[in-house]
Amino acid sequence: MSNDEGLRLDEFLAYKAELEEKVQQFALGMKQRVAEAEEVVAELIERLPAGEAAPSADGAAKECLPWSLRASAQDWQDLAGWVDWLGRHYAPQLHLRIWPCWPQHGGVVEELAALHSAWRAAAEADADPAGAGSEMAYWHQMWLWPTVERIRQNYMFRECETGHSPDRPGRATDAEALEARIAAAAEERRRRENARYAFFAEVPQGSTPDRPDGLWRNEGDAWEYFSLLDWSWHPAGDLPVPHQTLRPLPTDDALALAADRARWVTYWAHYADALAHHAGQPPTTVCRRRRSPERVYDEAYGPDGAWEPTTAVHDFFDPRPSDPPHLVEIAAAEAERLLHELCGAKGATDL
Image (cartoon, rainbow, N blue to C red; front, side):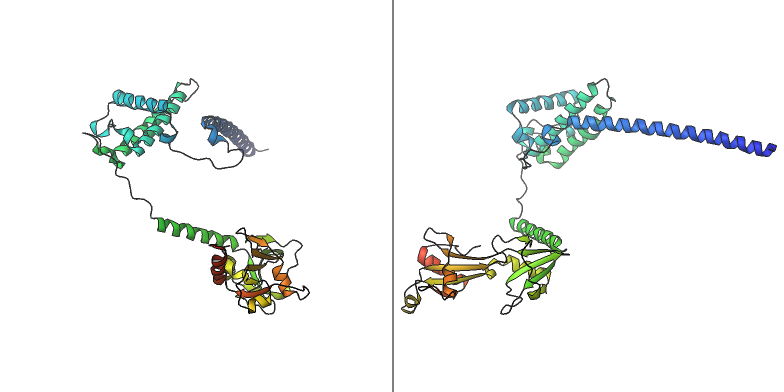
């Protein structure tokens, strides 16, 4: 080996040793940082209130109340004592002081309660010998003065220097605008949820796409039908899909048909028999039919003021019974009027 080759080898080995040392130092540093991060996360989890650390067992949403409605009388006294101490201890400039009427200003109360809670957490952490000792500094920088300045700038409270000036609450939310926004959001969610489906109208002979016998949709090989019994979509399962009579349907048209429940119901005025009808006698009640893909469902409006299962529709169309009732098809509006006249019912045709 020449002298030059030996020199290059020595340089390479030195570089390799230096690189290995740096890699080891980097790995050690990362290990320390991970350990520190784990400690911080564990501490934050310990500070979480029990209600925030774990959801309720039944998954039900808990009622969330502001501090002012959760606080006990002692909580109020503790907060007042702390606010008074804050004013004495820090003695801020006049334009940053908290006026004595602060309990009468809802927003100011919530701000001060949050500031007090943050102070307690910082003070407890700062008192821990194992802590970093920066919690109180962080509280002063990030919470104390920003909160005090926000209170004085954003609330009517700044007008209370010489005496209490009541809050002038903001105007209530426009109910119509809110309702319209909720409806628009629901419509958009529905559109997004249904974008993955292809929709079909069941149009056998005698039906039309705008008045089909049923609604179907599929995502690949998975078929679902729209039930006219509970007005929701269900997997077809063992129910045969009527491929021969299905016609493609735009999504918006399918959703509009599904939303128009009255379109799917047929009503009849019910007479004791054909003679009663021809004699001009009034009907006894109203029957209706929903021809849902899973089954045909017939009902009659009963004496108890509710719809009840009936065989009257089947008996009328089946020639075998010797004394079938007589039915006359009527519109939903006429059914509503008739039930109000016969039974005093209102909204009986609502679905």
